[in-house]
Length: 252
Image 1: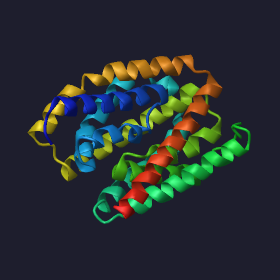
Image 2 (image 1 turned 90 degrees about the horizontal axis):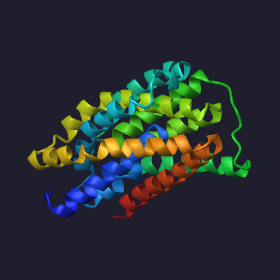
Image 3 (image 1 turned 90 degrees about the vertical axis):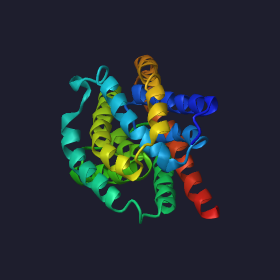
Image 4 (image 1 turned 45 degrees about the vertical axis):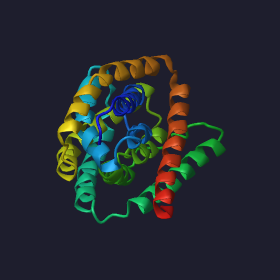
């Protein structure tokens, strides 16, 4: 990777976009910013660059998403599956067919969003489910470790619960704070950053506080319905990106 002005500008923009999504929706949409990074580096290098930056984003986001915004009953159910999922994802990282995982996750996500749109865009409140929560945490752990795309499984569990927008975003935020702490070391083992990557990482740090702050300002302006419409729309974008990654991987 050459540390050119274009590389710096594109990487900075990608980290800013991910930080913005973190501030607005609590996390889970990092994959939307990764295409920018892929313009100037390979996906594994991007993963090594982002792993420490995610932790900084988490620390900054804690200023906005405090304990009062966490749904602790949901986290108690979700986090054990997340821990196991990240461990399984790391153990299978080299052998997993990332293309197939991307396609399956995209198909499930699009079906989930399609059912929501078919129902008129209304949230059907469903009760808490321990098996579904464990499955969501586990699946999110694998996909966040493999491709920084743990958002869809978590969203598919949390959105139908009818949480307030603050509880939804705060619970998502803490969930990925734990996940990012757990996967940082494995990602640094898989893709240990070299000198230029560390330099680029230091530069990109400057994008995080402003990105999260602007995302938080958007979060405050959105009402409950707008917030969830935005989340469902972002799930479509995420699913299409996963679908493209999977199919293009086979065609390439």
